[in-house]
Each structure stands twice: as C-alpha cells, then as structure tokens.
Length: 417
Image (cartoon, rainbow, N blue to C red; front, side, top):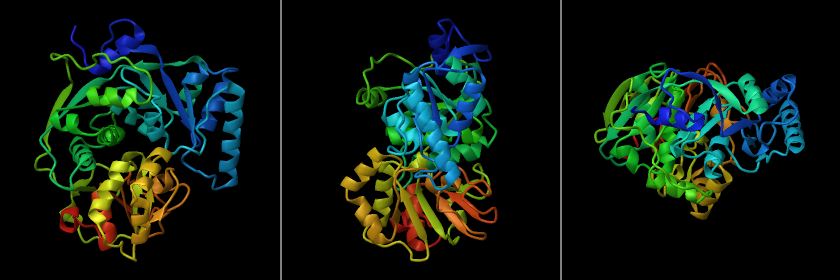
C-alpha cells in the first residue's frame, strides 16, 4: 500500500505497516533534553521509579537557554543535570557547544528514518535530516527516559511543494514565513509537513533546517525533507551511514497538497504578535527598531551570517540600534570567525555573543523594555517573548535584519544590498 515518508518511518521503526491515524507505542532513536526542560523530565523519570535511563547513548543533554547560568536557580538546575549525567553515563554537551537543535544536527544525533523526540517544540528542525522529529512535554520525556518509547498517533501529511528560484536577497526564511502566513498558526495541527519540489532540493542543509524549524509555528507535529544526495553527504561527514531510499510513494495519500512558486517571492516580515501575521517587507518599511537579533536555531548558521555580511558590506550599523549576533554553535561560530565576519560585524557596531539561545526566549540577555521594538531572525514573536509584554517583536530573514540594523528601521534588503 502506498505510504508517505512519515508512514514509512513509523512502519520501519515498528516493523509492520503503519498508517496515518494509527495509535501505538513507538520506540525512539533519540531523546533530547536541555537546561530549561531537563530538570522536570529527570524528576518525572525518578518519580516513575527510574534508576537507569533506557539507553545513555541515545539520551542527548545540552545546555543552551540560560548559559552561562544567569541566576542561582539556573545554576542549580544545571548542577542537578550534570550530576544526573555523571550518574547515568550520559554524554553532556553542557554549555560548550551551543543551541540544542543545531548541535543535535551537526553531531549527527538525528538521521534519515529515525524517530527523535525532544523537550523543545523546535525539535522538528531535525526533519531536515530526514528524521521524524517532534517536541514533547517534560512529563512525556520522563516516560521516554524510563522506557525508551512513547505513544504516538501517526500524523497525516500535508505536502508542501515549492518550485522556482529565489530572487536576490530572498531565501528560506522568507519562504517559510510566507508558508506560515498562508497555512496559519493552527492550519497544520498534528500533521506532518513534507517539504519538496525543486526549490527545496536546491536548498542547503541550513535552509532546510530553517524550514523544518518553523513547522511547529503552523501547529505541525513535524516538518520533514526527504533525504537526498545532500542529506546523505551531510550525514556521512558526521557518522557512519548506509544510504537507503526514503521518500513518499508517488501515489501516497496526502491530506492536503499546497503549491508555492518561489520566483516572485519577496522579503517577508511577521508582525506582532503572531507568527502567521506575515506581510511583505514594504508594508512595514520605516518602522523604527531598537534592537536587531541575528541568531537562534532558525537562522544562526554560517550561511545566515554570510547573508547579513553581504548586505552590510563596508557600512556600519545604526548607532540607535542594539545589534546582537549569536552563531548557533561552536562549529558555526568558528566558521564565522575564520571567514573574518566577526571582526567585520564588531567594527560595524554589533555585539557578538557565545553560542546560546540568547534573546530568542527572553531568557539570559537582550530583553526588551516596554515600548521597544525588536527585529529578530528567530521563530516566535509572541507578546512578552523577548522581554516586556509592552514590547513588540518582528521576525525576518538575516538579510532583512541586517538591512534594518543599518537603516535603524525595518528596511527592504534589496534597497540596501
């Protein structure tokens, strides 16, 4: 019987034919916790009588949301998790590597055909590697740590077909913002988004991660790109793998198919206070910004900083704008550093921080005061997300963010670059 890639992954894992709507207990290939959600998951595991996690090799522990610790409670949580890692024999990436989703990908901890769960909604990022990856709550994770499995209802799939070539200064972030605006914040609830078409095939792994990362912003359970030659090359550089065919059958049954043309796509911006309130940049051009943030698990990769640098050129950022830039991981930071971009950004007036989530969730630093406006390359602009509930957060691509940081107001990168 014809199957979608999501049905294939569940069938492969369960050892029998599985179809959308089926409910079953499913073993997982990886389980990720971080410094915010991890302590509760560990306590639930212990309350369930857990003495040893199901497999220390498949538990992934990272610190990224409040690192280095910015409060005594944060420090206590991290000390608690370090002790647990030592007792359980879990390799702990601690605060050395960066944002959890970037690190999981670049360490090869999620791969084609695998089922990976994490106590963070943007775990769906790993779909860029051909995995079925989804966020779960800390209570569910406590169960996973104990038993290595979790109940799932196999989701239906929406096929997102994208063709055409991007215009200059338009890219993956503009595309996923446009799709989010079209589908809506709840238009894909508990469904898998399967990205395909010539535009997706031409995306780098960084671009695919950007698209899968924001699947949750449409309510999706997962976002996934069928693995191709690029995927397998990416995986082979990180771990031993044997490529195999994994893509939806030609006659697979999708609950919906949406088609998009990237040719005429223009820079997009999500305006406060909803991710699906997306407009062309020209509709909000001229809006004053107090802070620009380039980074996060959505757009904190080398390619994103390269886009920003192309727009910046030999100019400086506006002295009226606080520009915070954070590569998503140590690996990405070194790429940016070795390319000479950090020096260029600092000369232009930016503040470069060590790999972490930073202002994205309004945790460690970069908080907004009442009445202030932020333009961010992250994935959420909910009220109070980056500080005061009286502040406003807009979302954009790195190119648009860089152009706006130069102008001191939201600006079309095509006019600056």
